[in-house]
Each structure stands twice: as structure tokens, then as C-alpha cells.
Image (cartoon, rainbow, N blue to C red; front, side, top):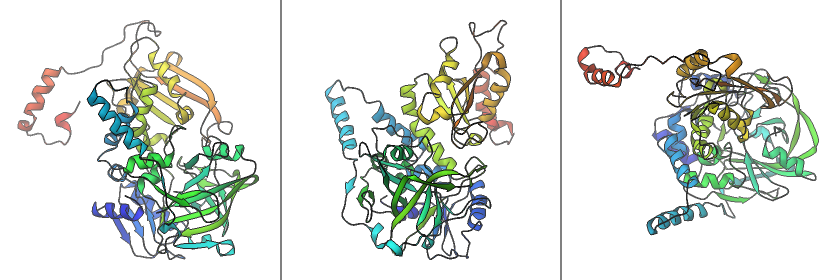
Length: 485
């Protein structure tokens, strides 16, 4: 898929796009409608009649695992992850056949760099100077306590002032007036580092409405050597076409719906927020840099792509779940002790990570807790729970049973002070506080065990298999019970 339009046709063909032609208000009303649909696991919605704007609004495009996987070119998230694993685990080839296979993979990777083009639909309409008017864009005022309208699904492009390399991240943008916004570059984000390393202004482009691989890549926690648009090319199997912005020295996706060009100045700060965030709480007003808009380009019939965040479950859960599954192979390369991982809905990405380990020695689970706290943005995780390898980390009830049953507070808890997520309102200081790890595994000798550890109650495999084979004959019609464990 090269653009948002092709992606919309895909989800329309899947039967998962609903068009709403009744007039709706971008001030709070779209949020209330979308919130109900998201929490019910409903379809993507295209609002075609938006108060105060000629642009339709697309929301909830990623709101199910099926849509999330389809958007990234697969039938399931784990299937896409296996493609990443094949590349990540490439070893020096031994035989002729292995060399040919490796050459094919390397050729695929080498072809994924972006392609620069001179023209593209993102500049069918060009507004500069005093003609720039963000009121043309139906930016949502999401929640009653928000400080204003926010662009919530933006791809924010900037270039590293030291290396010149491109970065694309997803940072909320608060609209202040027709030509001014606030840029939410948090302390741990690459964009913030670009600002700190600059000698003044940082050219920025805020892009709205791209194909799903490009949109997702802006959220992906990539290693420094892997640029987001190259990763998008890998996911979509085709180079991302980029073109020069009109008013800033920066490239943007040629097939985007809307591009907002401008600059950010490290010395020009102002109040940003409050904002009803994915944590389920409002984040307070804080100082962030102003984004001065110098150009607005778009397609003639542009579609505004957006999302809302708030009390989970929301659409962004599936963006986070995609990251969890797709990057698990890379995490396991760094931490081979880790068997599986789940960032549960209730943990809103950074509050909880559930991981499993096949223990090989006393203290193995605590080693894994510390390893998680050493992994990029996972270092901000407030709570890490470790269970044995035979526990399904996605079965939160099973995990809770082990955590409530197996943890002795004095023996099995680790408390560590350090950086936490900037949105962590429970931390006593901004972006700094305490984190806790729980070893919920069965305990061994050498782990403070002074009396025998009991066996879990389990039926023998031969009896379970015998009952499985006869279940249909029993006449007990209870969905799931034929495999109940």
C-alpha cells in the first residue's frame, strides 16, 4: 500500500470501515462516539460531515489485531515478527545454498532505502506565509479538560543536527492558533535530543495521513542504525517515496494527506497541556517548545487521520501490541533468557511488563528483571512480573494467580530507583521514581527457600488426552471446556 487511500480500501473490503454521514462535531463529540466504538472492539470510522471543516475524519483504523496485522502486511502479528526474526538472526552463511538465501535477504534490505521524487500528491495544495490556516484541518478537541485541540496521530519528521540522519517519531502536537502549535518532545525522545543538540531552530514537518506501515514506523522503538522509513519499506515491501518540503529543508512522504511545515526553537518555550492521555489521566501543563508553522500542504481532497487516547482499551493498544510482538525477536537476541513477554492492556505500555523465563539457576528471574530495566524504553517500566516458562504471559489471570501465590514481599521483590516515563503521574518527581520487580516463579534452593515448595495441581496428560478425545460424546455444551486446563 502506497497511501492512506489504498489502506482504507483494504479495510473497507474487510468489512471493517463504517462511513458516518451525519454531522459530527470535532469538539468532544467525535471522541465520545469513537470511545464507545473502540471499547466495543468496533470498526474503523470515516466521518464525512464534520462541523466546521470540509475534510472527512478517519479514526480507529488500527483498532483490532486483524486490522493492525493487515496494515503491516501480514495475517498476524507473530507472523510479521517471524520476518523480522529471519533478518535479525542472519548468521554468516556456510554452504552455497545458505549464501544464496543470505544474498537474497541482504538484497531485500539494501533496496529498502527511501526514494526521492520531485512531485507528489501531498503538495497538490500549497499554503505559505499568511495563507497558512490550521483552522482548515478538523483537529480534535478530545476531552473536556484538554488545553485545546491536539493532533494525536502525527508523524513528526526532524533531522539530527549532528549527523544529519532522519528521525520520525509520534509526538502529540497542540494547536494554539492558525500558525502556532506546541511540540510535545519529552525528555527521553529523539526529537528532544535534536533540539538540545541544535544551535537554534530545528526544521520540522508534521505529517498526517499515510499508509499504515509508515504510520506505525513512527511509533516503533528502532535501534539508532535503522531509520523509520527504511523499516516502513521493509514492512510494506516497497520503498517509501519522499520529497522536499516547500518551506523547510526536510523531506516528507510524497503520498501523505497533510503536511504541516515549520520549525522549533529551543529558546521559545510555552505552556502545553493539559491533555487526556493514554494513561487514563490528564497530564498537567508543562513547558514545551513552540512549533511555528511556515507551510501547509495537502491533497485537494485531503482526509484527516486521527486517534484518541484515554482510559483503555483504546486504538493505541494495538499499536503497542504490534511493537511488543514485532520487537520480541530483537529483545530475545539481547536477552536470550526471556521466553515471552506481554505488555498488558491494564499497564498502558509503561506501567507493567509480564515476562517468562526458563530458570537455569537460583536468582535467574531477578537477573531478567534487571535485564528488562536495561532495554531502551523498557527501562521506564514501573512494574516487571516474571513467571515460569510454562505460564502463558497473555493469560493475565494465570499470571495474577502466580503473583499472588508465589511472591514473598521480603524475598521476591526488587525495588529500583531510576528514570520512569514522563507521563507517570505516580512518580514523586518528573520522569524519576521507583520501579518494582516481582519474581513470581516457583522458588528453588538457593533462593531463600527454607521449606519444600509445593507442586501445582495438574491432571496427568494421558487422562486429559482421553477426555479430550471423548468430549464431544459427553453432551456437555460449554464453549472452551473441551480444552479447559
